[in-house]
Amino acid sequence: MATLLSVNVGMPRDVSWQGRTVHTGAWKSPVHGPRMVRRLNVEGDGQGDLAGHGGEIRAVLVYQLQSYQYWQKQLGRDDLTCGIFGENFTVEGLPDDEVCIGDRYRIGEAEFEVTQPRVTCYRVGMRLDEPAMASLLVAHHRPGFYLRVITEGRVQAGDEITLTRKGPEELSVADTDALLYLPDRDPTMLRKALNIPALSPGWQQSFRELAAAQQPRQEPGWPGERAATQQPREEPGWPGFKTMRVGRIVPETPTVSSIYLDSTDGTPLPEARPGQYLSLRLVVGDTAPAVRSYSLSSVPTAGTYRISVKHENHGKVSSYIHATLCPGDLVEVASPRGTFVLEEGTRPIVLISAGIGVTPVLAMLHQLAATRDARPVWWIHTAHDVAHHAFADEAHTLLSQLPNAHEHIYYTAADELAPHPEPHIAQGRPTAQSLMALGIPTDADAYLCGPTTFMDDLGGFLTEHGLHPERIHTEQFSALPAINPGVTPTAAIRPHQPPGPTGTGPLITFARSGITTPWSPAHASLLELAEACDIPTRWSCRTGVCHTCITHLVAGDITYTIPPLERPEPGTVLVCCSRPTTEVVLDL
Figure 1 (cartoon, one colour):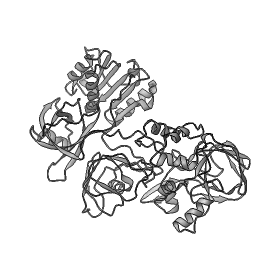
Figure 2 (cartoon, one colour):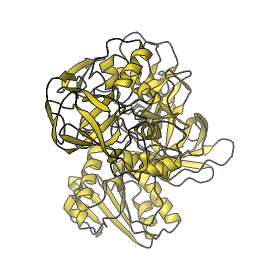
Figure 3 (tube, one colour):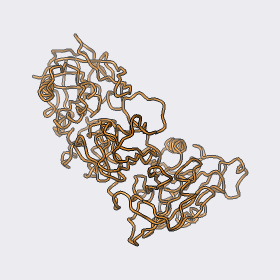
Figure 4 (cartoon, one colour):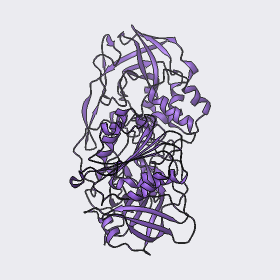
């Protein structure tokens, strides 16, 4: 007979950790006497990060005495007291390899349902002072599990635990956890997982995507869980950088020029997907080579890529490209990459851009025109004025080749406020009202590129109009928004060289952030180096399990200090547990 040994609670607190402040409810302590368990938590308990813990689906966390005994031997610890694994219920019995998702249990006056394994999270390592603990819980098949409260009521230590209903498919907690986090997934087990209504929505979404693509591609879903759509399928290309020749440079506006890059040996270039970008490595002055990424602005020909670059007033690399780069010059180029790509399908297409953000959606428009795509297409572009409207004639010509195209241009300059003779050109900026008037279908796929505030605003307008958020795709060349669950936000700091003595190892380039710095073994991982530079980072477990930190490896080689439980796809790296072995360029 299983027994509730201890009820543990704790309200969120601020904990100092590696120079940060983490708001966490992981510090739980046993309580005496009965405690009321309600729909969201145990009386007196709370969670610091509700994105990954707590809520109706994860109201109560359970861990087993048998696992305590196991870790005492494995870790050589004699200080593991009830609640130290962050659990609300410490139980005797209910092992992870026997309890199944969807099982229901009566404890005291309350009834519960098993919804998912524990979310893999760095905070359990904080609490135990064992940094690798998140990985160990998964690798040793002892994660613990969450309960949903079916019937509220009082519970207390000593209550018997009675199974009231067995879950469908009888998929154990340990097997469910391994199915998400470990390699060599069994398709039959994936289908079983999707037949369990009690399984939490986040895990259901992860398994749907893994079932759709047996070779998984990871993206953060719930912090600590793992979904499957960030990185693209493996593209044909070349490793690292190769030399290409500048074929010609064509001015498009006073501030934008197109650079045509040719193969130096006449061999055909790999085909790029519409919307992808190239990374260029250029030696500008006496400093270390700089890496910048630019969207392909047209469909590549057999031997030529076209990028289009805006001259930024204080842009070191864009100034070099506009003032110094000449036809015939040789440049180092990484193969096309990126996930902001035009997808096949039958739904209407909405292409929205501002300024130089036109380039990736222009490549998409080229593809649509080349195939005379029958889908309805809305082309919506915002520019400062006529003189700074790059590719106006080119886009207009491409749209005329489509059977069902709608063109809408906005000019924001004050001297462009007079009514324009062309009906598709308006003054000002797109608004929720003006977008609604364009007749965009709510089942459309939308692709947005421009300044972050522009994409946020227009994406919000489209969502209000009725488009599904998952069908609104955005491209961003600056650093991606940070995912640092539980860490108290601080004022944003511009990325910089790391403090302390300059490293003597190979150069590390963070391409999105424009930082190149020598590696120093003072940093435990590439992630820690990025954090020392105040580069926005994305992580959850920090031990190679959840793949939240997955990053494109543009060039170079790494080694893993903690072997990941499942290696990422070729061309990507888990920065939380890797170090460089050569010069490295990261899309970070």
